[in-house]
Length: 158
Image (cartoon, rainbow, N blue to C red):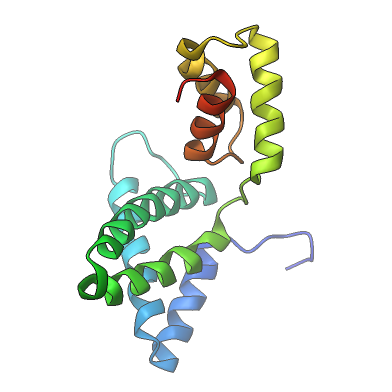
């Protein structure tokens, strides 16, 4: 393999799974197996075609979103849910390396303000959906919840 060739996410996960099994790392082994199962489920659906890194990214992003919601629910349970919340924290952090990094609040705010200006909707709280939609359709490096919050703030929709 030349230095220009990238190792696929599938190959990385396979190597990580072997390593986790060798080292007895149950947490890592379990989350990798879960992702591989979800990828198999998605890839068996009509129209998916070849399983590429993009399919893995979509599956991992959906899994992280689900686990983030579940983690928050466990956190609300206090001490009773702390162990599960910590487990999900590990999974989210571990899998995040295969997703493109998201822009921070400052950069996102700049984009929100520019989009509001481009769409000429300043001061119109009813335009939140229009602004959020315009940004989320064209960018995959944005955190949707952050975009929504900042847009509401900028348009006075709160």
